[in-house]
Length: 289
Image 1 (cartoon, rainbow, N blue to C red):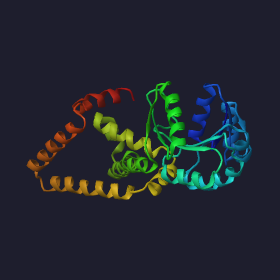
Image 2 (image 1 turned 90 degrees about the vertical axis):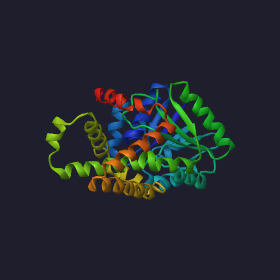
Image 3 (image 1 turned 30 degrees about the horizontal axis):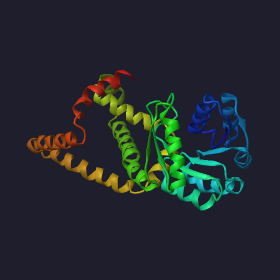
């Protein structure tokens, strides 16, 4: 199969190209930055083309572009899609791009796909994907994609684009927000070098999370924070919870602090009876870093 990756010169686009090449597919990539595109061509040994050329010649199209550029790209390629094509987007937000694909692409079958990992992944084994079909045809395609992924050791979940985005406001939005605010806080204390040396596993895990987010592309994280629906409400909830706990510390209310921790233990047990193993799992995780 010939696959066109629109935005294939980016990190995730390159990852997809490398994976598909190993799977035996023919790959052509596109990109806005000519130097990055040529670097990807040399690195991967793939063809490069314009968005229009790539869309015309491919049996499947993967759109891997920033959400802010998504609609112009879809508008550009939509006149050149054909009925037998499959068009997938792999952005981290689903409701908006799926709506845009339905609006512009009248030939070909579209499907929203979210790989729940970054370009540092070695493969898809033990990785998760979310597929967001919106009708019977897309659901049938999603079932085929799920089978393809699961036979290679991955996990795939089907849900609506809106349900996906609601979850991502927490899974991505809140997680990244905590990492960014933690980095800002740690750097404001001005003893980070010393703390890095003497810090224990819990601190190292927090620092790894903070550094992992801050080290990546700011535009990507900015785009997620600005475009994920309801993420501001989730972050305001976090701020209210943080104030509640900070007030307990400021007032030295040790009894209520411990009581609330026990309440959280009970609630977590209802969600995951094995949650008590997390402390040991944290140490194993840190040993692997």
